[in-house]
Length: 235
Image 1 (cartoon, rainbow, N blue to C red):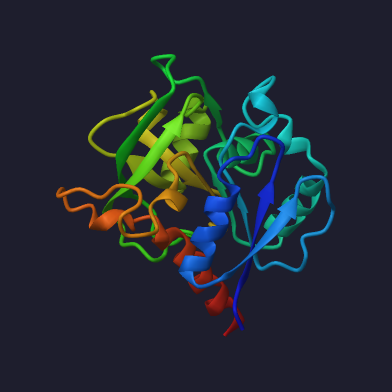
Image 2 (image 1 turned 135 degrees about the vertical axis):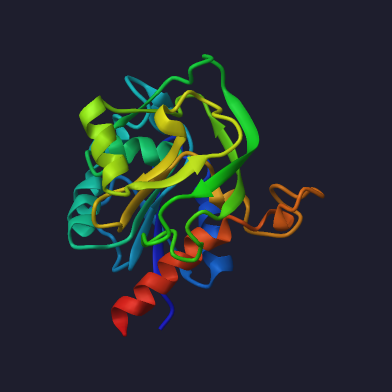
């Protein structure tokens, strides 16, 4: 049976259609979900997409974290459902306390967009198992509030428990502590990352240069990982 992966649209989401396309290309069925609903429509996994929910009012992701559907997201995550937060979605996950730490204004106070090199640190999560630990990939990055921060004790725990999913390689674009680009919860089913894998799933779109970026398809592995996780759980 084809996996069904829900993509939640919030007021100000702008990468929800891209995430739906990425899910489809990876081999699953994308299901559009609305933030104001309380119905997950029986999906097997969830994606909280990038954008500027509620105009980043108060703090990026702070209002969206209180959306009606987030109650169901929290319950599903607690039961082990794979949940991915991309950029603004990552901000929502930390604001909803589904992931530790927080995201603050970029250290240079500027919006940034670039093809970002990453190292996959943890290849055992529901969203990274298609990669090898230590593998370097290139994913587009675009954010203004992408600096990952946490207190010393939380940061030590994240590092000690292997919860860093991906780390910036070569350059730290936003001042994130320990070059952290994405993290997972302790169970590994919830992952948040600032770069945008949905923008690197098709040849000719996203990073596509002579610098061995594999025609911009490094992002597809995140979505294929979720499909593999669901298949393994159903076996």
